[in-house]
Image (cartoon, rainbow, N blue to C red):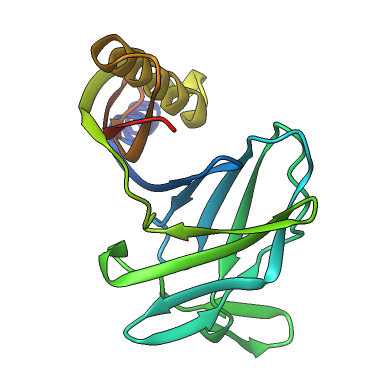
Length: 214
């Protein structure tokens, strides 16, 4: 009887569905392509792709977040290592005003990341060689919207694959579909990824705006 009860508990655990949503704002110029993920209420993730043949450095004194007419500096979680030529790196940032240390060995971070970028602005200064630039989210540059793309896919037995691999595959499927519809010189921006996962299947969808490249 105990074995049956235990088996039912295990089965109920693996059948529980987990939902995931990821929103990405994007920025690009002739030197850099970057994505800002703001789904975590306590920190943000910046993924930077260096499009040049020279090392790129994020400038720590030129990183800020503005909302409600107030501007706060952001601090990195970990080391701001350089982005190699043609390379890609991910960085994590928190608002120091949202960090408290009630005890010497314990740090707490309050929720501060906005639900929407419409009323806020993130800036990340960078340097390539002797040239400085700034990545701004939402991207203030004028872009030509070619259309939208929506795609879905079911991944069997997701427990045996990494979530990042499934997201990448769906992104590539969406990119291929967008290129087939709008031509080769496009990028996907404002990407939203949603999935519902249990032991047997991961039902994933991805939507994005399609813009013409520079």
